[in-house]
Length: 234
Image 1: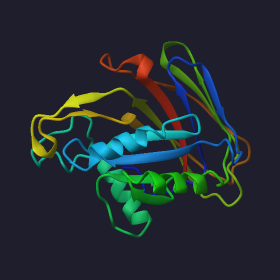
Image 2: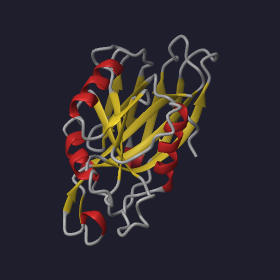
Image 3: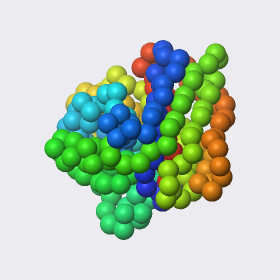
């Protein structure tokens, strides 16, 4: 389980067709993360998927995290995971709201808004883009290897988790039960995997470097995949 955390640092991403990306600590260019907690079993979620997908661009990284607490209510979401339900609950605890729902968007771990409210999402993105960042560099190598470099954490940082996610776009489902019965749903960038690689200590000088191997399943379409590295302040 990922401990209660708040985004305050930086992230970077690389498509499987690329070889390198670098995120620099500049307020105008540092990527902002938009996490959408969603479910195929929720009739309010398809509009949010459509809204959030429009934000998936160079300076915004979208993570579509399908929760599993809808799965017993008529339709099992094949992209759902208890990990994402737990992560959403962690945010509710960390923000001291205890309020979790679908569709819920969390922007850089700092603010939650209704996932279908494009104006609120944009406002939160604008605010988050001014947060201090560390530099992150990713280099995709042969046979699914990923070279990772994280620069020194900004002043005032706490310990931070290094998280690695793989997302896939252009995923659709024909729903035959539940609230979305009879609908064909299109999803924002679906998180296929999310794992914790390391913990960083701001008191340790220098930068963090590592090499990770990405395990891809045969059914995932390589051209639609993105690898996302998150550095998340605890």
